Image (cartoon, rainbow, N blue to C red; front, top):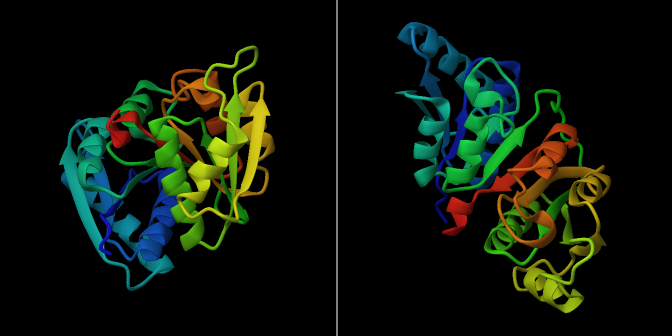
Length: 260
């Protein structure tokens, strides 16, 4: 099966360097093209942009010399350039901090715009996460379309990287609204082939539970907008808490990636 390219935003920052390494490993796993994308800042010279991209190519080649690489330099705001690139991407990867506006990821308006409008999953990698030693993928599930896509993405990622799966269903405190029953959770996971997945049902503040249950995670996968405990993950404190404190990369499923 031919996969779409893995797109990674590059700007020469340490955060982007770590994102390139993560993206290169993912492209190798998918046997897909790695697309290195740089948004040309106002006043930035094309030669300077070329240096940034060339350095990113070398980083990726160090990880996998045989990987297929495409490089692009586009004019426009980083979020605009990346949202456009997401239209034919398998996943868009960004660093969580960096020199450019692209990288205030998911806290500032640029990252929020990308997370809201990208048409594929968005993975945020912190610059201090140079070595990924986690043993599982932790997936937040709430029964929404974004939650379903999070299951699809997380279970597939775990399968390709030989990782365990932990699916966490959050129940909002003080209401029965959108409660996911044990049977519903098991059915949703099993129909995606996750028969060996660990299923966890929680109540209370989702971010605290997700972080506690992700101490040995390689990746956390969350829907950008859902219902119940994971609702509005990207517009409130829950997403910011997870993104600031997670000890591993975080994959966000934007509403636009689910037809929402």
